[in-house]
Structure formats: structure tokens, C-alpha cells
Image (cartoon, rainbow, N blue to C red; front, side):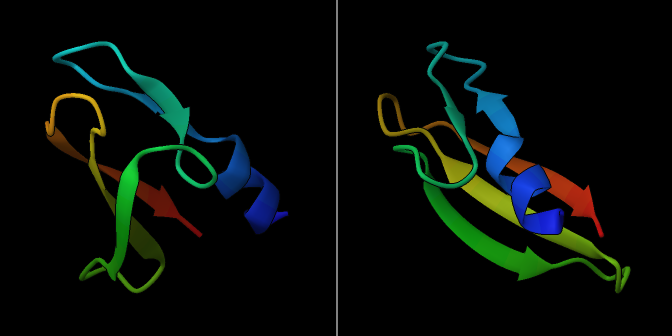
Length: 59
């Protein structure tokens, strides 16, 4: 069910209002590990304005 949780997670750009899911949308996404072993960090860059944000998901 983790895959479904990731697929259902959406983020909205604070600058321009673009909204999309972490996966399968136009967000430019990179994935990294947090210092806490059970946390994954999704670093997002807005495709419309270039604003950067991050989403942390605990597994």
C-alpha cells in the first residue's frame, strides 16, 4: 500500500498554485533518504515557475 500512498500524495506550489501528484505529474522529482531510516524525501521543482519544495514520507 506504500506505492498507493505515494501515488495519491499531491503537492501544490506555493508560488504559482500548480498542483500535481508526486509521481506521474509534471513535477520534476528527485528522491533521497532522510537521516531517519524510515523517511524518504521527495524534492520537487515546479514545472511552471521553478519553485522548489520537499515532501517527507515516513514508511
